[in-house]
Length: 197
Image 1 (cartoon, rainbow, N blue to C red):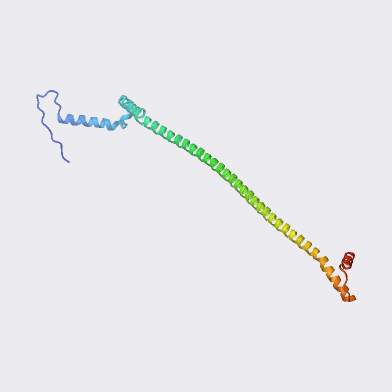
Image 2: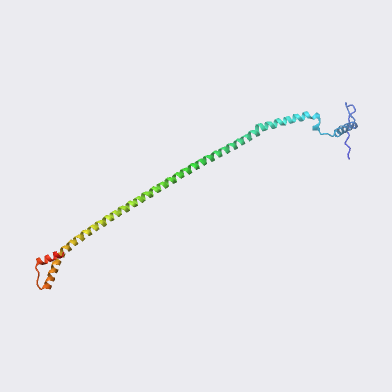
């Protein structure tokens, strides 16, 4: 262990202290601090400085919070609230627009169904009218043909009836001549045919 160098002190210097006395005073001071055994911050003579230091730190932290951090947090909260309210309003508008579009689509579907039903009814009526018209035309053609046929049949019947008397007269005359061997007169034959009719 090395001994610290001893500096020579001039004898005429005022307040000169011998090296041994200086060493003893230092040891006494250190020994006094070690001997107290307490923390400096708990000693009464240091409280004023600590209080001033704490007040200074409190003022700085309060100023930082009040001027820097709190406005930033308030701005963030305001932006967040504004974003949420904007999103909610947008969602409500989109929902309202979707509901309006759904109602409009429902109305368009109902209108299309009504138009389709009207078109189908018109087509059915048109087809029915066309069928009735064709049936009436065909019935008229058939009626005309039936009338023509009846007229032709009437003419044929009248012609046949006109020839019946002639055929009957000739037949009666031939029969009388064949049976009697004499030809009958036309008046007799005509009277016989009329009596038979």
